[in-house]
Figure 1 (cartoon, rainbow, N blue to C red):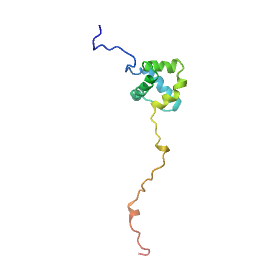
Figure 2 (cartoon, rainbow, N blue to C red; figure 1 turned 30 degrees about the horizontal axis):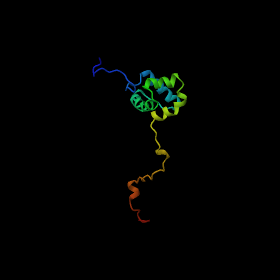
Figure 3 (spheres, rainbow, N blue to C red; figure 1 turned 135 degrees about the vertical axis):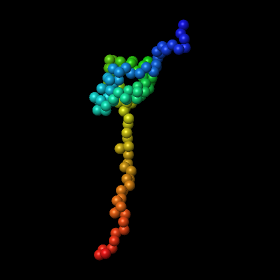
Figure 4 (tube, one colour; figure 1 turned 90 degrees about the vertical axis):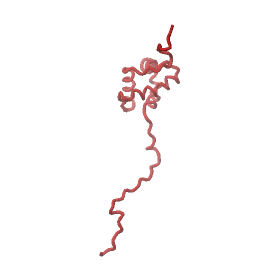
Length: 116
């Protein structure tokens, strides 16, 4: 008999990445893109990859990591992994906004007539 307080892993459980899985992913991201993923980014990576795990019908992040690193899935998923774990900044592609011209106090003074 199972009490309502028992916790047994089920499909799509919220178990996070093991440190070894995070390290493999972070090393891949850095080697592929040059972007460092320090340990403080582990939660971000887990959250973003969980969506992919669900979309692929996998049971958890461990299964996804096995697919990537042990079953050759990284060839098909490399661009996706980079896209989901990095923040895309596109503002440098937009038209430049006019910047206010800084004025020094002397530039706002009225010029004096010549010879005075």
